[in-house]
Length: 278
Image (tube, rainbow, N blue to C red; front, side, top):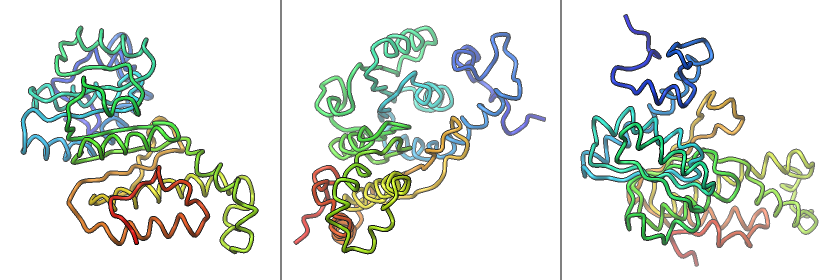
């Protein structure tokens, strides 16, 4: 009887070797079983979104920002797209040209014709004609610092139905908290970020709170959970947003109120709301 985390029928063994999930002789050792478990753990969050999009349109699209070696894109294509959505497309966005070239070569070798890779920054991808005017799913796993916010901006501009984020290295908000700490001393909440380590941790947490409010202010429902064990990273907060045309006013007001309370109104352009407050 197959174990829950054994290789699934039809998976590309060559791909699993390239991703170092299988050893070169095609074996699963303890370390590779752990990696495979992590892959399936992530896939279980994204698969329902893929099924939802496929039910509406066979040629739906997914854009993966900060793709790196396109680990996520290849796994999604192998487990879902090649059998269940052959007309759909995955686009990997990455700034390192050598990784784009490597992924392009690997996709061609595997026959994954529905995959394309672009040497672009997240910000530059918004208006790039090589991408569709509308995108169904946007993912950004461990996109550092403001690249996650650029991915959100991209998703909003492309009217994405679903957004999947694992934020990383959130330094911008912490830097702004440090800059305005002196002016905020009358506010007892400043104690939350008075010490440097707390500034970093609170800044990271606050960044994701602001992102969730921003997405809600644009009509999305938001679920926040943990992506346990992924790449042994402490940055394993998983944010999944789905567009449901929800009321925008209250989250927009809360977003502006939080920014004002901690003295970060200058960041309003980054965490821009979908509803004009006041």
